[in-house]
Length: 143
Image (tube, rainbow, N blue to C red; front, top):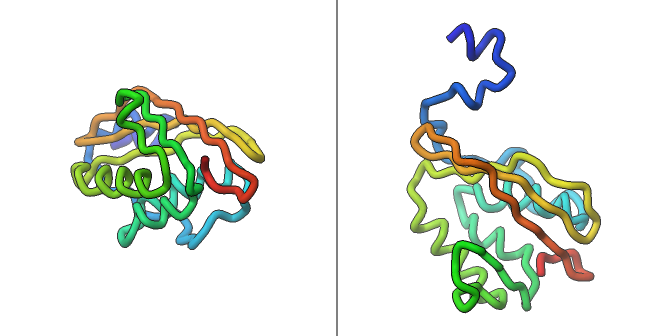
């Protein structure tokens, strides 16, 4: 496609094909540093999209007393410790359609906290952007 390949700098918006599941970007076994932006990049671009044990690898970056506040659920349904977060992540990964992709767009620069902008892709459709806030404890784990 000449438009998509030659002159369009926004090729993601013209792609109507299914890109398949996300795969780890660099093959990292852990975040590059314990800074919030590096932990979040690792969660989104490495751990959760790993073919093997993605939810478990993601949960390793959460603190024992982590709270996963998801505004699409009522507060009572939020996972409120590492065991519940791990269960939530496993269920999310297991129940998601194979080619549903959560794609990280941007991460703010942050040492102990940061914000991530993202979107979802499925069946060639891209959703509006979402936003997530992450805060780390003194050990550099998501709390």
